[in-house]
Length: 354
Ligand code: PMP
Image 1 (cartoon, helix red, strand yellow):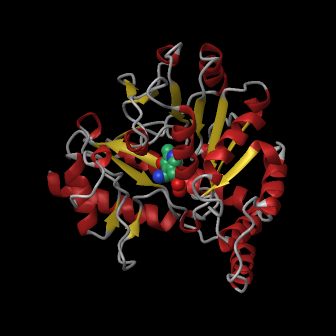
Image 2 (image 1 turned 90 degrees about the vertical axis):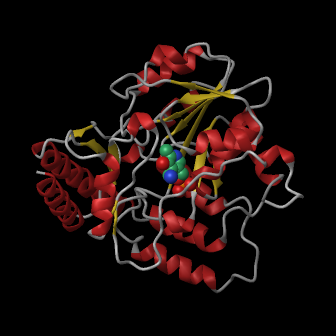
């Protein structure tokens, strides 16, 4: 740290992203990426856009916005596209939290929320999950805070129903409730249809998971016009050109291939069921994941030992050292072959234990 670093950031512990090894020597099941490349159309559109990189991108993302609005069944001015959904989440902390309006989120959830809170000098409280990692909806009633809920939650994979989220919205009419739907396409109910009913609802989603575009950085928020106007004020005060031309073009290409996206989601959901059943047969406890990852622990193998044993065998999964979840590993669901290799690795590690 230099002596010039602002005191307000000296205690800041940044978010730690999952490992991104340079060589592809690993079967990568650690950062919930899609195992499938973007669609051909998306790749072609991005290549075409590369030829016009001397120009700034359209700051309003008009074409992509209109296309996404059609897919989601909302109006273009009810959407704001961002550089990954991390950016819209940060914008929400900037726009809806301050010293008088703290943030609140689960004690086990996406690790970036506390980082965004500290970055923006926003006080926050954490709400404990129940023993089984589920969310007690009533704990979020009348909190007097801006609420952030990952639904499905990460890394637990568990989802609330839309009607549960609705109860939270109704119990906090004077506070924004941000529903982070990064993984919603893999089997949870989206709250996007509720944006016309609740002016305090902001839904965030991403092209990083079900739409195979983690490397392009494309996310978005959906909410009533007034919320989107606030977030645009923050965007235009931060980085008006937050979506680069190639990403915008790739996003449009992906949206033209929604059928392919749906069929890939189906494959991931099938592979998730296959892997969960195999893990349970080996004695693992596996949560009821509605995402593209599994969250699992075994009574005889330490969570970190399993992570390290798999890494030695060329398979990367994600282990968190947080005490309440240190027995678990989070395993991204990939292709059937990847999951087979993962299961073979796990089987060998278990055999070595006995
Ligand atoms: N929310 C959750 C719950 C996540 O796990 C992630 C991915 N790490 C994100 C948001 C952000 O994803 P992205 O910025 O790639 O859209």
